[in-house]
Picture (cartoon, rainbow, N blue to C red):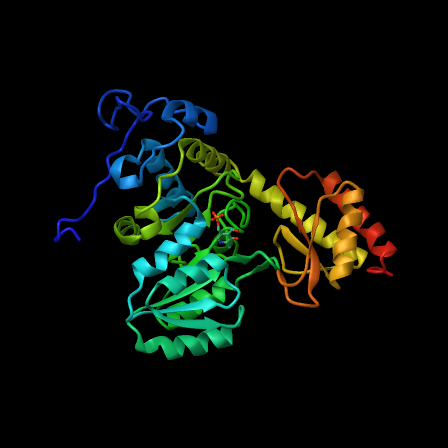
Length: 369
Ligand code: PLP
């Protein structure tokens, strides 16, 4: 790209966008005294950039957040997107050629599936978390130039966690790269909230992480890819949702940046999430319910019957607890459930009250003896 002269450098703006602006490094105090948080970013950097990144849409806060994301995940570099959907839509096409192969878990998130559809690599779909099937597909894919295994780190419907240790072992054995989508893990899974790779001790083995700023990291919007620097450089040149979509608004960047500061200052939030999740899961199991998945704050209370899930969810709401029944076509027939999502701001009392309400409602509707 450099040889062709089409490499695009980004100018870093250190002030609000307007008729007059200041570039980073353009004078004393250009980046000094930056306050965190969405409101101060809004005040200082404006509502938005009206531009994609490489024209006039890169501010110092975008570069700072990318650096912070990379540091948080212990990776070389990071690139921001308007959403993780965009990050997933942009990565496969930019990275893989028709000579390559991508191996994808059959229950991967829709945005991974769409991203893979857009690329011209050879596609293999392995059975959900089935390592025998993945190995068979990896053997088949040896004929290709490069192999990429793609999986959600944590799957949101069942609250189950990908067997990353085994996946990384297979990837090593069959010379493949590993990509994980951490939307349901970043900020709370693992001892320091780094995600599934931290939880399972494979931070140095997973090559690429895509995740969202729109869930645990502040809940506003935005997504990113973090991984090896040459990959991030390539994405800036070639990834279509990055090149052809406006950059993240400063308030969103400010919120996410503050969320990362909090997580890097202390692991108290991540630890408390694990403790609250464990409290809910063990108390519900002791009460006689089946909770799908393991160790994840998404706790699907499995009920089977769609009507039962719906009336129980309604009755929980009558008791002041907001939970939603999930049934076909969102989940397979006969696997209806109520999905409970534990949050860092739930107290132990909230959790106990929820378990009590479930127990009463479960007895009333025959889900418990
Ligand atoms: N990947 C997974 C696993 C998700 O659950 C979601 C959102 O629901 C996304 C990607 C998309 O994230 P975003 O909302 O940032 O586009």
